[in-house]
Image (cartoon, rainbow, N blue to C red):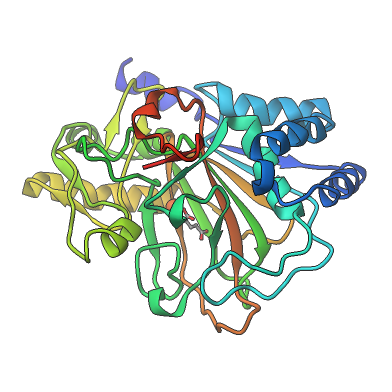
Length: 341
Ligand SMILES: O=C(O)CCC(=O)C(=O)O
Ligand SMILES: [Fe+2]
């Protein structure tokens, strides 16, 4: 495709807005509130959530299914007017999980949406392999490039997984679902999502060529560096940051630092950051709202906010979703078929 064709082609739709009618929200809420803790029998509960979510209006259901299955569909879906738990305990100061949650509506929303995209999976190096992750500011982690952070901008990244094969962008989740139980006190924390299609259109061809060359080494996730590597940098093999066909690019970056291997690559990395900021969709998540994030089509980030550690701090829940578990079976643990090393 010539450059002029690219310029005149219509920009792809990279954000999907999906609003539920009030009556649907209320029915979902009633049905989910009747379900027990999903972790007690996860596969039965996932099947039950399928039944419940099959009651979504057909057009909404199809848009969510299409989000998970097609190459050209948006990279981020903003789902609103979801049900919430009738009562919510204090936001756990230790980063969760909350021991005193009485109903599992939030978990049902998170896992029900996840089940429409693929299979929720866990990794032992991220939140001890749990399927439902709590994303909560933690005092000791306020300035870190991890989901415990608050006072710093969490850099544009996709969620990657340390892998001994040297690639962190292969066994990682295909999708994340982020669902909001409680907003931050001031309502200023925004989740950003920048799609590789929009980013590529914003960059000059030389920068794009550099980003498409294996000139970058990703640092392992902050949680891995902290919990497993004793704070040491653990770099991937050299990789390209953007790969795949021009029409369907894949992008990968580490919040915790990327090492560019040449000065030209370093400059390209700076331009990539600027392009992310210019093109990003920005969402202020509120209770009853969720983001479906394609973890290959784009990068996400979070703006700074102030945590008070008073039980009323921002509280999101998150899943990691694989379209299929087959290609990561070399990492499957013996004890649990959804949990991976
Ligand atoms: O807190 C947010 O909005 C996003 C955090 C994040 O990057 C994640 O949980 O993977
Ligand atoms: Fe993330």
